[in-house]
Length: 141
Image (tube, rainbow, N blue to C red; front, side):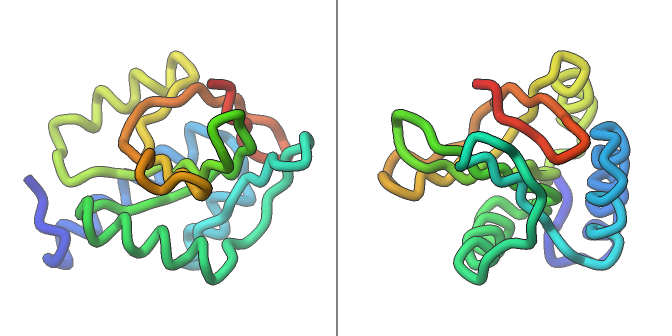
């Protein structure tokens, strides 16, 4: 298990996040993350677009990173029948799970922490379906 507080472990997690961003093949995400910026694919209006996180969203990302000892490298905002969801793609502290995460990508899935903005008690870690477009990432399920 990697220690979130150790610099060398954080660097390994960041390197893994960079690798995953390359799998997504959206250059704008790579460039932003290299500058320390996590972006959001906002699909709440039916058409996905990349934008910077709001202050509120940044707080949620920071909170998840501290609690899960993880690094969030991208987020997806989606309106669902269960409420508005912020899905946070992350690199977790268990290095032995990273190869499984790569397999998820091959099947257009990602392990995420989903923050339900309307019903916070329903927030949880899980797997979602994703589809990459030149405008951002769409949550498919």
